[in-house]
Amino acid sequence: MFKSTISSKGQVTIPKEIRDYLNLMEGDTVVFQYNTEGKVHIDKQIIFIDCPVCFGSGIIENDNKGCYMCDEKKVIPNNIFAFKLINEIKWRKYRISYTLSHHTMDSNEEVYELSIPRFSLRSDLYGLDSLAAGNDYIQMKLIQEYAPRRVQDPEQYAIPSDIVLAEITSLLTETSSKREVTTWFRA
Ligand SMILES: [Zn+2]
Image (cartoon, rainbow, N blue to C red):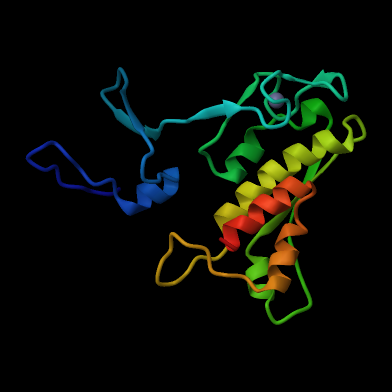
């Protein structure tokens, strides 16, 4: 249990442990709900975006199949942890499997690498392009969440060497994803 004192304006600080647990960032909205048992719940307001795999259509046109990423709902929750998203997607229903592994590299700089899990989708029902789109979307979330931060400024990524950056972008399939991720580390 965590405590916080209410100010004269009715404001409270959400304890850090709860912010971390809900992955709350500056600018996020929280929702409060009460139930019939007199309990109040606080949760993060989930923001939905057009599905990046089917571009908000619910159908993957190249494969003429329903979209595995959004379960044909056309939108996906955006501001949730990658692992939570992975758990919510109905992979099995679409006969898709995935592996999550820690990447190893034979170098002195492997500490940076090891902190970013490698995500990989497999399916013989969907084409490589449609798998790459989902793969890269989730892999980019994992990079965002797991890339080491600067000690003095935790909002900023620690700067990887060129070799490590090449390893990071090798986690991605599409050129556009590699290019975007490069800009995160090389402003
Ligand atoms: Zn979709």
